[in-house]
Image 1 (cartoon, rainbow, N blue to C red):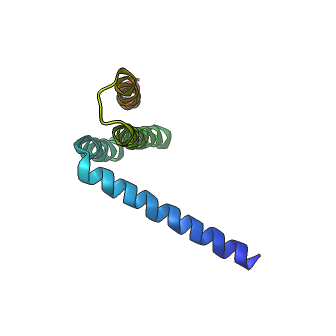
Image 2: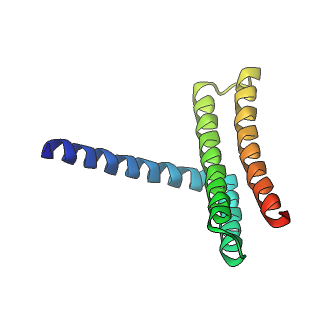
Length: 120
């Protein structure tokens, strides 16, 4: 049992390390990740400075993190497509555009949440 716990702890540690390495790699090359991070810092500061319920605050913070997750997935998708094929191809463009649209939709979801909370 102890060996299983040690192995799982090591696996978890590796996951944390690889996730951090992915974040750092994307941070170093992706201006949009840095921009969305700044938007999230401002959004979180507003969420904690305004008189919001815990649920409202949680929704705002969670949606902000989802925007960052979508941006990271989009970055991974673009990197994989560029690695597989350096040439312009309609299918590669479609895949990249869909990844970008996913980021846009998550950002819109965050904006909608803010609008509903502030108006409602």
